[in-house]
Length: 119
Image (cartoon, rainbow, N blue to C red; front, top):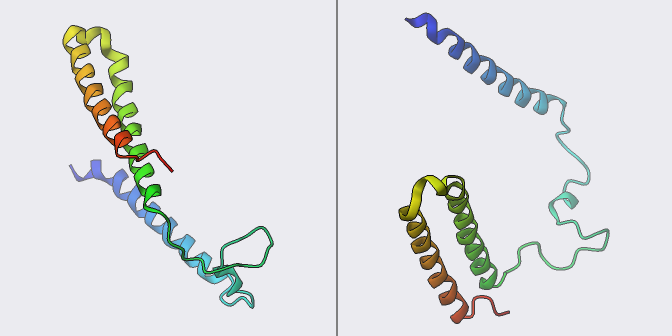
């Protein structure tokens, strides 16, 4: 019974040893102190001098656009499996998808009316 778990134990042990080996090699071979380490903490600005601090506030509109993108991206993720099997689902599957798209359309119209797409 335990012999069947031996390959899994070997795989877990080998992957753990590999991960630990890479961490140890990185610590031993990497540079511990670099004279220009402070400059590496600033964002890269195409060779131009750094202006301002790296921490800046962004408009909430970026967050709203990102959330809308995630919602409509998930819509696509739900539409693709339906498109593969829509012939087998028949009329019931078609009506379900219309209800799903209707709910998303209501959300889209709501976001549009609230001005989420206006800059």
